[in-house]
Length: 196
Image (cartoon, rainbow, N blue to C red):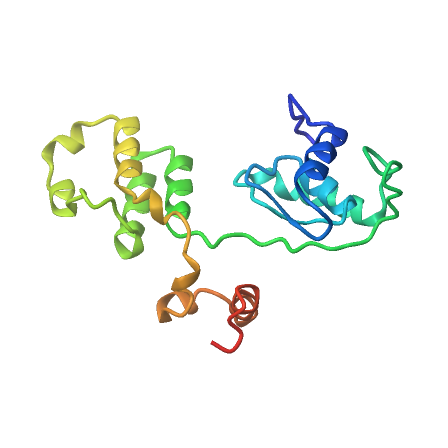
């Protein structure tokens, strides 16, 4: 899979903790999903789970691991709990808002690329409340800044609380136009608002 976790948790430890504080059908929350050990154990122990991961290996490590567990893999605690496979999970990604600009800024290697990203930012980015775009655009000092300084300044300008769209933005016409009807319906269903 290309990525090794330096301190993988043994399934037996996670099982001990889950057994100590939950019962079947409880929901286990793991805000740092990593290699999906907690989710794998929760599934094998008949618990529901919510796993959150912000890094990009979810498709190469976490999801494939859970697919193997559902198929009946026999590692970890499988024999102890007589795991035969089964179950399901839903995987969803957050819709990027400022995160797209942030990624593009991080990938930029020239002043022209930074300028191109900034031109797009002017059309739809949410800025930190302290940002004055007129001051930024008319600042003569900016042109004397190094590439790295200009990149850091543009990154600093973005409102980091708006890296992704919030669920309550989904009915905004401008946001709704950005997603497919099936994604819109999935979100309504997921949040229990089908008839809202």
